[in-house]
Length: 266
Image 1 (cartoon, helix red, strand yellow):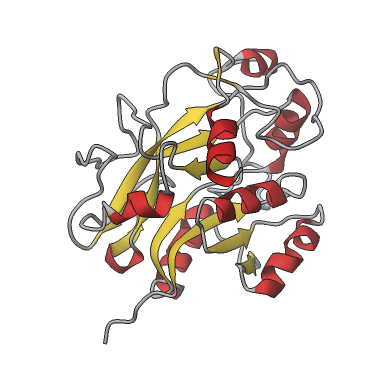
Image 2 (cartoon, rainbow, N blue to C red):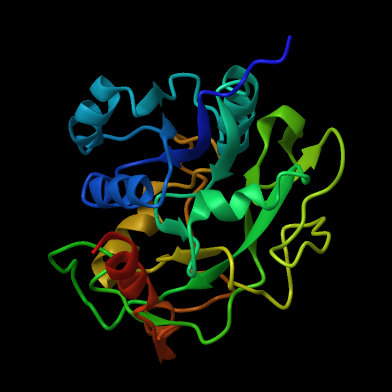
C-alpha cells in the first residue's frame, strides 16, 4: 500500500565541523519551505551537535553520527532507503550550499515537476569577497561576489519513491523510471548541465569563504570519502596556489539572495 509522505520537501546532507554556519543554513532552508533535514555527521569535533540539539529535539532534524565511517554516497543511499516514505522530494546538498527559487516559492515550483523523478539544479559559485578571516554575521551577508556565469555542475532534488541510488557521484542519481531534467524540463543525465540556468531553481555555493575558513576546509577532509583516512584531503586542484583560489570567483556583485529574503520574508 502506498504511503503518503509526511513531508513535501526534505534536505539530506553530510556535515563535518560546521558549528559556525549550521544554524544560518538550517534557518534559511526552513524559510524557503524545507520541512525536515537528514544530517549525517562525518566526524565533527567542534560542538556542532550543541547547535543542532534544539532542531533534533523539535523533530526537524534526524541526526546520525557516522560511526560506520560511511562516505557521502553511502549516506545518501541510506537516506533514500531508510526514509523514502517520509518525503515527496529530497534535496541532496552540502552545508555551504543554499537552495532557493529566485522568483517564487520552492515547493510550488517543484509541483510543476512532479512528473519527473528528479530535478537538476545549477550552482552559482561565490568567492571570498577578500575576507582574510571569518567575518561576523554569517555567510549570506558577507559573501556577495561570485563567478559571472552559473557553473555547469548540478545538485539533485529527487523523488525517493522513484530513485535508486547516487550515480557514482554526489551530483546525479539513477532512477527506477524516467530521467532527471533541468529547470527547462530538458533531460539531464550527468553531473553537468551546460550552459547552466538558474531562473527557477538555484544553489548559491559558498565554496571558499574567507582564507582562514578555506585553509580549515583543506585540512578537514572530504565528505565523499571515509572521514578518518588522512590520505583524503581537499586540495586546491590543478597545482593552484591558495592565494589564487582565494582571489577567484569574485567577478560580479550579487545580492539576489538578500532581495529574495526581503521579498519573501520581510
